[in-house]
Length: 223
Image (tube, rainbow, N blue to C red; front, top):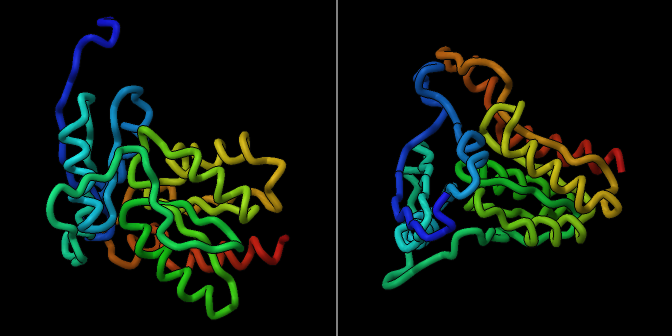
């Protein structure tokens, strides 16, 4: 409407999370809703250092930014660089290099994927883990480069299975890296149910480390 002449430099910080027995009303992961809006930056930090660097970059951006903070990450401690620490929006982080399979994730699910990778190394399996950090803009180049190297991919997130960010990324990989794939892309997401209040049912509905481990083992067996 305005030919790119109008700037909207606003950052909306908002919490979201599941797994705290808050019922269906307060247990959502809504990043897929926002990723669907062109022009809206969607940022999801997973570490204290990234929270600082990405927030500073978001404040400096002339576009509207929604900064989604997983409440379960608030207690996490980690080193935070001093000074002007800025992480460019749309640049994924290769958290761990590997050659057997690519695991693509973001936000709190990164912690489970790292734990899964630690366990998989006991089997002699070395996954490459990518933390997206930003869903719009999305660092497709880093995703495709890794998948073309490992020839297998798993996309893990805490949001619901249907219509999720994982589904979009799996589609992108299939469209752009099909000839490199040795197996179908696997998605790991929450079950398509309103989040239960009961703790056992809630945990059953959510993805965990063991889901990642089992998915990797099953994909490698199918190779």
